[in-house]
Length: 178
Image (cartoon, rainbow, N blue to C red):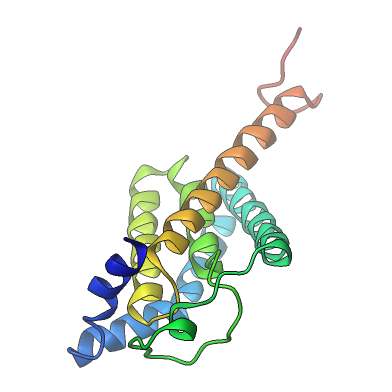
């Protein structure tokens, strides 16, 4: 099933140059959009600075999780075992998890928890990032879905944990008086 869905998406690559170009750009350069949004949020106001901080912490944790998973689990990329459409060169490292997808969902989830409009836009960009990784021949759909789940859950846990600690810290706004 995973390979069949991969083929449905990946078979479309190489058929339309403008879409191929877009998928390559998304796959290779979308991280700059996320960095720009986080920098913008950092300087906008204190509320957005906290959101940006949470997104950066979540991103750092997902990078650690990526490294840990790769220490114990290896899944060959689609182009290693099969003949697939590959639009950009790639390392022959593990297909799961997708670092691009982990980071994009970590950031978009952190944002969507506080700003529904901007977060929804970033979520769409995250989904496009995942699709672009399949389109370019680098990941299976299960890699993308699993990475989206891990990135999203990491952000939710970081958000709840930081809120809990900030409430319990004396001198912080919203602390408990129990």
